[in-house]
Image 1 (tube, rainbow, N blue to C red):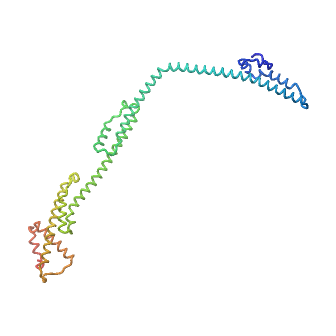
Image 2: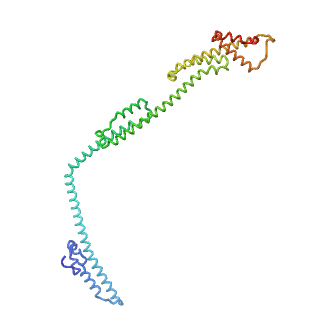
Image 3: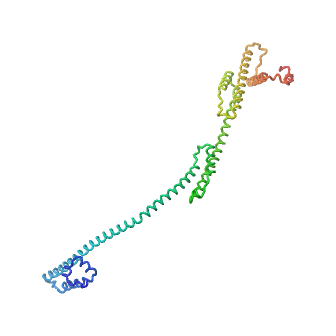
Length: 334
C-alpha cells in the first residue's frame, strides 16, 4: 500500500488480500502502534487510589485487545496467503508433471532404442563370458578322470585358437582362461601318472609277495607232519590264480604254484617214508645194534636223509660224479 496505516480501525477494515500486501513491511504499522502507545501512556493514573489502579488495568486490557485485533488481521492474511501459496504449489506441480510427461514422450523413442542397444550389448558380452566360462570348465577336473580323458582335454585345449575376432575386448580374459585350464589339466596328468606309478609299484610288490608266499610254502611245511603237508598241497592245488591280479606275471605264478605242489608232494612222501622207517626201527629188537643220540642230532639226520632221498629221486645217482663221491665215504659210514 502507498499510504501507511494510521489507526486501528484502518487495520480492522483490511481484507485478507490487502492485509497481506499492507503488512509486507513492519513500517506499515508503526503509526498504529504509536497511536496505541500514546493513548495508553498519555494518562498517569494514581496508583495510590483504587480507581487509578483499575484505570491502569483498563488501559492494559485495551492495549491487549488492540494487539489481538491486529494479530488476528495478520493471521487471516497469512492463512489466505498460505492458501494461495498452496494453490500456486499445486499449479507448479501440475506444470512440472505435464512438461515432464511431454519430455518423456519426446525421449521415449530414443530411450527404447537405447534399451534395445543395451540388451544387445549385454547379450554380446554374455556370449563372450559364457564361452570363457566354458574354457575354464575344461580345466576343472574332479580326479576321477582316466588318463585318456585327461589327454583328450589337453588336446582339445591345445587345438583351441583364441582370436581377437572371436572374443573382441575379452580376448585377454580368454587367453588367461585357456592358460589356466591348460596348467590345471597338465597338473592333473602329472598327478595321475605319479599316482598310477605308485599304484603299479604297490601292485607289483603285492604280486611278488603272493608268488613268494607260494614258493615258500614247502619251506614253511618242513616242520609240519605229513598229514598237514598233504592238506597244504591240496589247498594250493585248489588255489585259483586271478589273471586280472597277476597280469603279465601269471605264467610265473603258475610255475611257482606247480613247483610248490611238486615239492610239497615230495616232502609228504619223504615224511611218510621216515615214519615207515621209524616204525621198522622200533619193531627190531636188537639191543646190540641200538645207540642213544640227542634229539637235535636225530632231527639233523632225518633232514639229511630227506635231502639225500630227494636227490636220489631226482636222479642224482645218474650224475657222472656220483660213483666218485660214493667212493669217498668211509667204510664205517657205509
